[in-house]
Length: 476
Image (tube, rainbow, N blue to C red):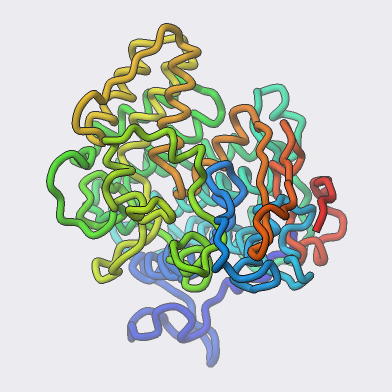
């Protein structure tokens, strides 16, 4: 991998409106000096840099299916074609139906964020600021780096199956650079990358605990770091740790589960008025899924799948209200609507605490405890008759997986969950708009190599020696 991002910041790149943001070091180079400067740097370049990432994730899952609609544009239309290659698990999904390139920017962006975190942490002792300010900044930087590696590992690394497999199978490169480098890096093992993200999130937690700074939901914070630690432990099958970190989230926050069974006034679920949001992030797509890929209009190409929608009982407010889906069930509504509240389309939220604990308990054979967690969430989603039962831990585990699917649909959870569980067979159809009975059936096989994304073409061209995943060729 070749790092191509600037370490020294030129005037105007970040928040040029702040007159004291940069101090002059030479005629054309500006270097941040204070904790405040670096916090703006971390936010502008790492947390909120207006880059839309991973729009394709849910299209690849069993939560999405094509819309059979005679008003839909033909298969050659740009509207229908976008993300078609991800929907059909093509060998090189950046190459679209017409062989145009739809660049996957996640690899470059997450490594950019890692570089930003590396720079901040390397200069922590040299910054002007109080101890609390420095520890708070360190907490954010360690969180950003751990989170970025988590995303990279689950996009481009092989799935974490068990400790022995993780020690030998490849993941993604580890980048420790703090400035511009043209040094190709090779892949590290899954274990090495998870060890690093685990160490980083522990450092983030320790830093936030030392800082004791009040945070808004628009910056990483102590509960967020505990939740990411729980997520990492769950993916690593360290179930006791997953439970303990989830417990710590509840001990460190005043957030409560949003009650969908009561009257509410928020216009959409992922909204700053939602009391269970711990950290809000991301940039809303302007021309991708939000515009037409999941929509009830004639331009729609994909809709929530029949299999997903059948999981909800009739009085489940996730289905019955407009907080999760449009009334007709043809598009997810979690992040649609007014943006006047400055809410971003993705969030770390409290529901994950309950479902992480539920899964960990089920995996440990603790059926009653797993059901307790699931029903605590369902009580806030279903007005009556919300409880589910299971005779065995295996049955409880199935219920937990279904609940995660219903709760986190279209929040980029499902693809990662499928990878780490059993990588099942998925079938997607793509039909002719003019004649829906004329279709091509695409199959993602059990344990298909296509459960791992290929390294983006731009990176492959710069680093010819890096190992890539061998995905099957599929019909176009």
